[in-house]
Every structure is written in C-alpha cells, then in structure tokens.
Image 1 (cartoon, rainbow, N blue to C red):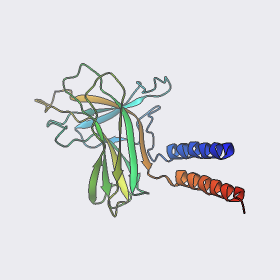
Image 2 (image 1 turned 180 degrees about the vertical axis):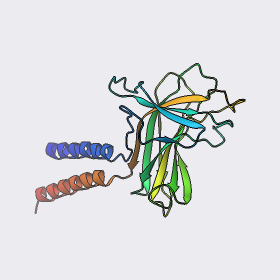
Image 3 (image 1 turned 90 degrees about the vertical axis):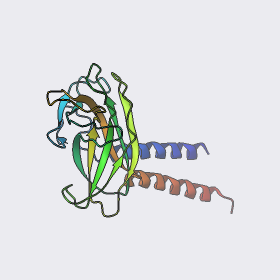
Image 4 (image 1 turned 180 degrees about the horizontal axis):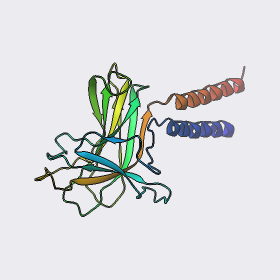
Length: 216
C-alpha cells in the first residue's frame, strides 16, 4: 500500500511539473526584455522594468502603460500589450501577477484578456474574447490574476492581452495615464496533454498492481 501511495504522489508531482512546462507564453517572466510583447495601439506602451515579482535581481517585469483618453475599466473596454499564441486545446488556464505603483493620477483595475482568431497568426477574423476576473486596485503589492477561458469553435490562435484598465477617463493628452507591472504570465492548455499522459500512466500502473495483488 505504501508503494502505491508513493507511486501516486510521484505521478501527481510529475503531472504538476508537466503542466508548468506546458505554458505556451514566450517570455512571460520578462528576465531581460519584453520581446515579443507589443502594445495594442498608440495609446499603450510596454517596456521592461527591473522590478521582479520574486525579487530576483536577474529578472524583471513588463510595465504596461495606458494613455487612452476614455476609461478602460471596470465596465468598459480596455487594451494593453499582447502576444499571439497558437491554439492547441479548447480550454486554457490563464494567470499572471500584477503590481500597481502608488502615487499615480488614475486608478487601475487590471486583468488579462484573450482574443480568439480564426487563423494561425492572430490576423484573421475575431471569434470572441475571454477574460480572467479583474484585479483589485491595491497598490504597491504583487497580486495574482487567474481564470479559465474556453476557445470558441474554429479558433486557431489567440492574443493574450495584459490590460492595465485605467478606471477614470483622461482630460488631456498630456496626462501620464496609468502604469501596471505584469510578471509570471501563463497560458496553459487544460488539461495539458503531458500532464494527462503522466497521470493516466500512473493510474494504469496502480490498477495493474492492484490486479496482480488480488487473490485468484
């Protein structure tokens, strides 16, 4: 029995590791730059920042700035910086950490959005959008964003969008807008094929062990 429990624990650990390895985001840790993340339009910018969610001196985060004139949250739209991902499953777990610096002119309530496309390069027709629950406006603390999104039928790619979501509208183009730092961005197929394979193999092994130990 102990050996079976140990085998199952090892299988679960391996499945968890496989799930982490299944992250489809390129450069979600922002160790030294923000490539390939780009702003949605001229009202947004994304630059590398030395502040890291884990306090690592060898890594950093993405500072996404919203200078759009109209409000970007919580009840209206918003944009930010995005990365295009090839869709490989129907369901995804999306997560990120965010940090709102204090002393800004506007309130931020950030989130992560996913825009689905009917081609493989995020250039075709938009099939819809998924969202994770928006974050709190708490400043000077790293906080999590997470949620699950479902790809619509026909989706072949998706833009994962880090959105600062400036709550209040701006009164002038000179207004500095609002900054939000993002780090540890993940876009993970659910269930990940690798994780499923490890778990299924462990289940089969345990079942076979039980059968071999059963009285004839």
